[in-house]
Length: 113
Image (cartoon, rainbow, N blue to C red; front, side, top):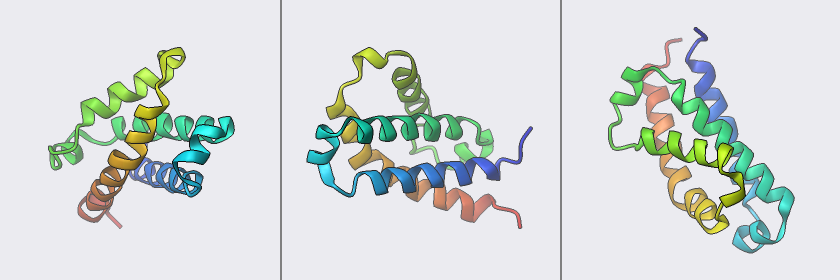
């Protein structure tokens, strides 16, 4: 098994990229296919990385919908013809910032130096 800290790094990197790609706001997201693709890909990778975190790390933060994150990733990866960009934008605006906070709390609690 890989060191689980690598997944914290991966999640942080994806969140940073998503934040960078969305600096232009909602309008740019809806107008630019490359931005949409980049954000969707990073959401997939980020969500997959959350599923690789140790169960006890996730259990320490039960308010986070870990199952919902996994389901969203599976939807993005397998139902790509049905992706609703309004839902993606809602996730970016309302759920990614919450996950960022949770990941930082997990890192602070479980990161062994």
